[in-house]
Amino acid sequence: MMIINGDIINIPILGIAFLLTLIVYSYDRFSGLDEDRASNPERSELLMRKKKHYPYYLASCIGALALLVVFFSTTQLMSLAIFVAVLVSIGILYSVMLKNITKYVPAFKNLLVASEWGATIALLYGLSYNSYTSALTLTFTAFVFLKLFILTVFYDIKDIESDKKRRLKTVPVMLGYTNTLRFLTIMTILSWVILVMGTFLFNLPKLSLFLIPLSAFVFVAIGAMKSNGGKPSKYDLLVSLEYVVWPLGIVIVMAAGNILTYLSAVI
Image (cartoon, rainbow, N blue to C red; front, side, top):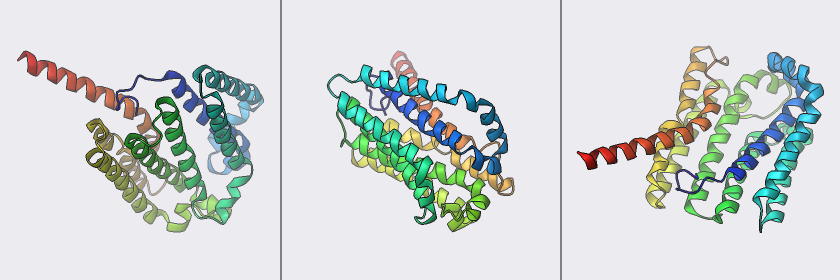
């Protein structure tokens, strides 16, 4: 968002976003080690060997996050501190006691995760550039919400049997394997529609449209899963890696555009 909108890159706010997710997900991983042994024994075994170091690791991350909040905030220290504390608390509460709500509320986990990190985008960007309700903020919040919803549903596919036994109403459990893949395809196209509408109706920078091909990795992962008989494949990681590709791809596109402009002027 910063690159596309031509903003000065705010390193502290990127650090805060990174540490927020790191703390929440690492806590979830270590608190769910016993459950993980059934669905992902390799990862579980690796984390078990590191378990004794985890309290120090978590304390270091929380300390770094607190320092960044203080460093970043000048006039909005209280707002940012409350926002960060609420997000971390929600993430930890999910690991401790909210997971079972998925037994009663369909797709609760997917909606909670997508909402939490979608809100992170809106509020952190809004705090940084005082633009909570700008077209850019609202469009990208909706886009990221859908992409994260897609990501969590995709990774729920591998747990479909264990989630059935635990009576969790995840999207794959409710729709089944084939319909879930169709659903993910529809949701991905819908996320692209949001970008197109934001660009042509609300004058978002045209660079936004380049996120469409850069966010198509889910189709590669879906195709690989189909060819693998519905089992996880080595290409599943592409669904997560696309978030790394977004800024890199946009920078490459911008550089290519500048080179073409320069060459056309010279010629």
